[in-house]
Image (cartoon, rainbow, N blue to C red; front, top):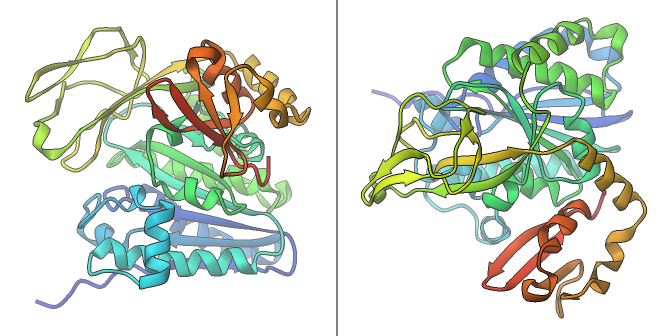
Length: 381
């Protein structure tokens, strides 16, 4: 039996870099999440007759081709946990290893490097995903202002703080290189509507970035209605409170029936593992409970917050107050790294993360009473 033919890396490249921005749409970074890849093919086909109206370039990319062809989250390792500086630099300097994801990542690095290098305007990246549980669609960003503004153009919940809980995501890594990024979760893996929501997200991002004028975007109105209808009753803004990491040896089994954004009580039993019941340490809402064979995240707990704080945060950042954060009690500049600060929480106490989050910082490392933070998206905030 011969090898299975892999899907194409570049589904389509439309428009031109001679005018406007570049939008990169990535689907199937996880191979068991084909909805974004299928939606990309739909939109790419629809855009072929409108290419002359694009004010810039749109490129549709397949993420993990090998895993997609097998219908698995990954073959050897999770491709969306490998975009750390160390792994990328190893592949750049030494070349890929023998694993399937090394080969995928090396090829993606080359492709993305070329796209960013040849972009003559702003580069945007939309990373399309699905979850193993049912429930509403949502967006998530590394919380720099342009990325947040993009996400808020879609009428779905915005979840902040994921990059503090999960290392090595594609959109977090490329966001460090001047690209405005957003990840969009469109529903359950096998849900037909997940493809429709992913397609709606692409149309609305084309509109929000200005790559396609409204007169050539008849799909935008229905796309907005679809996402707003499916998100009805959900909070507009939430933040991460807790991630429950799992390993294969844990024997983790999620309790059946949990959906995204379902209310969770503190102390409520959510799963079982080799040590017994797994209970929530926080009150909030469920996010991405694990109902698939592969995965390192058992579940997340998020809590809603008032959109008023998004306005406060934007005002503080535009006023340039982040530059004076070292003047706060218990906060000092890192002795070796620009834009990085060390926080003594015995002194800083209650505002250690709250104020720093408002000013655009994220937690990098936590060791007892010491917290290390750095600016999110400092290059374009």
